[in-house]
Amino acid sequence: MVFIFDLDGVIVFTDRFHYLAWKRIADEMGIYFDEKINNRLRGVSRMESLAIILERYTGKALSEQEKTELAEQKNAVYRSFLEKMTPSDVPGEVRDTLQKLRAGGCKLAIGSSSKNTKFILERVGLADFFDAVSDGTNISRSKPDPEVFLKAAEFLREKPEDCYVVEDAYAGIEAAKAGGMRAIGIGEAASCEKADIAISSFSELLGLIA
Image (cartoon, rainbow, N blue to C red; front, side, top):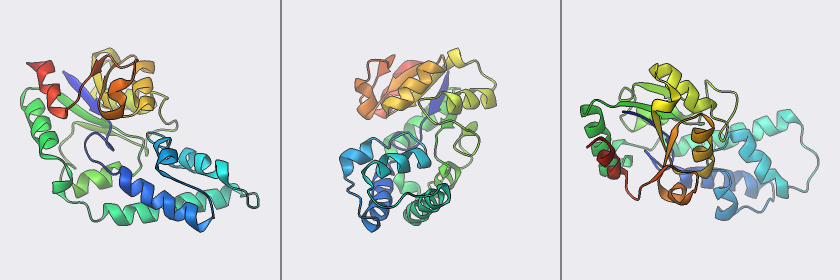
């Protein structure tokens, strides 16, 4: 079997880091920002996330250059949190399940919109674990566009219809289905009606190869 995993919220959990980094930027600009708004940012690109935050901005118009600089400032803060990550930031259940899937002959890939994907994988000791990594550095469109997953399938030399995508965000489920793949929802995405399979724990994936 072929599995393509989203990274944040599935393999590791960096949502809190994203929130704190965006919160710092929003506070400095006098923009109201809370965890409810932060949930809208899940699975979308950095610039699209900034656009959502700026919906409440009432200051002078910002140039594209200024927006790019704000996004870069956020990423610098976010990466300062990522630098503190260690292999212990991958839950034991996740690491054990990944190892068993691989031992069972499955192909494993990452499909994440984050441009920090490879850095995170390096910090948590999974840099060389996956057969392919498709991330924000090789795509031009973010989820719910299926590009990141289609690229992962291409890197694996597998047909989209033979791939299972594991996602925790609705946008990711939509992207998987748009790409002709089977979608497995975990966390919040387990309640997404478009998901083909819903799981409550990562280790349930082992039941698919039993």
